[in-house]
Length: 529
Image (spheres, one colour):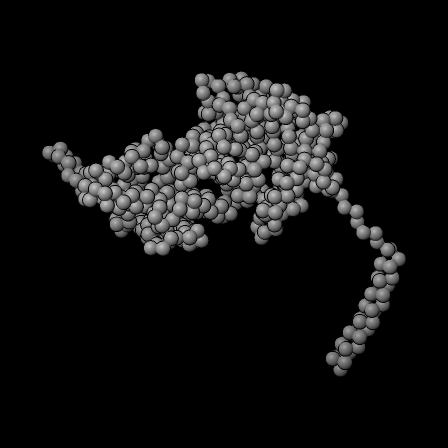
C-alpha cells in the first residue's frame, strides 16, 4: 500500500463519527471514537511488528509474542469460557488476541459491545503501569448511551467496519506517528466545535495553545507542567515548541511532561493523546489540582521549568473553604473568592514554577486584570514581588465555550531577587484584540498574528496602539489595575464631519423623495382608471 496522508486519515476518522451523530451527544461519542482510534492504532503497530518478527523467527508464535510484549503495549490473548455447574469443568468458548482485528471478525456477534469491553479490560490489565484507569469510563455495552441491543449492535458493527477502511490503517510502515497524533488532535478540535460549552472540559484552540507555548518558551531539558491539562493539547504544543527551538535531533525529545486533570474521561483522552504522540513517559494524574494536587514529591509540590494552562474561567465552588489550611501554603498571598477560582489556579502555577527561573503562561478572562477585593490584593502582591512579566490581550470569540476576549499572563520567576532578570521591573502590555481571522462560528489567530505578538514581545518596546512598557510606578499609580486600555491607547480619531455638507445632502434627498412620491401618485391614478 502507498503511504497514507494526513487529509485522508482525518476524513476517514471523521466519517466514522456518522455512526453516532444525531443519536449520541458529541461530548459523549468523542470517547467512543477516540478509544476506537487508539485501539486500532495499538493493534496496527502490533500487527506490523508481528510481520517483521515473522521474517526473523518464522512461525514461532510464542517467541514473537514475547518479543512483542516488550514493545510499547502488551496485547494478550482473550479466553472466553463457560463453567459446567454440575462438574465444575470449564469449556473454552472462544480464544483470540485482544486486538481491533479480533473484534472486527466478531462484529456481527450478538454481544459485540460486551466483547469490546472485554478486550479493553484485558489490554488495561496487561498494561497497568501505562493504561490503568484509561478505559474505566467508557462502556461500549451501554444502553443509556448507545441504545437498545439491536440498535447498539448495528452501530458498533458499523463503527468497526468504518475503522477497517484502508485510509485508517495506522501501521508504522504506512503512516508516521506525527500523522496519527495530528488526527487525534484534529478529531478533538472537531468534537469541540460540535460540543459547544461542554468543549471547555477538554479543548483549547490550537492557535491559542501555540501562542501560550511560545510565550512560556520551553527549551531542551525542561520539565513542563499543565495543572489543568484537559486532553493534553497544550502539553503537546509545548513539546513541539522544544523541538522548534533546537536543531539537535536528540535534544528535540529532551523534556519531561506532567499534567493533572479532574475529569475522568478527559484524563483518559489525555493519556491516549500522550501515547499517540509517543510521549509514553508523560506523567498525567487524575484529580482536582486545587484541592488534591498529586504532582508532589516528599510531601512537597514538584517544581517545573515551565507551567502552562488554560484553566476553567472563574470557576465557582473551587474549594476556597479549604484554602487557608492548604498543606502546601499555595494561597499565602490571599484566598480568592469562592465563586471565582482564577487567582487560585494562578497562585498554584506560580508556586509550582522553579524559584528564580521558572516561567508561567496562563489564559485568563479579563476580570482577572482589574477585579478588586481579595483578587486585587493577590494581584498587588505578585506585582510587588516583581513576578508578572507580560499581559497579552487577545480577541473575543476564540473559544467554542465563550465569546468574551481573553488575555494571557506571563509570570517569570527569574525576575526574583537572585534571578537572571531581577533588574527588570516593568510589565509589558500587548493589545492584540483587533488582529484575528474572522470565522463563521469562531475567530482564530493566524501565523501572522502570532508572529507579530512574539516579535513584539521579544523586542519589548512601545508600539503605537499595540504595545506599551509600563514601569512599576505607572502600575502603582493605577492602583495595580492591569486593564489593558489603561496602558495601550487604541483610540482612533474619527474623521471630521462637515455638518453643512451633510445637511445640504439631506435637503437634496428630501426634494428627490417629494418628486418620487408625486410620480408614484400619478401612476396609481392611471392604474385606477
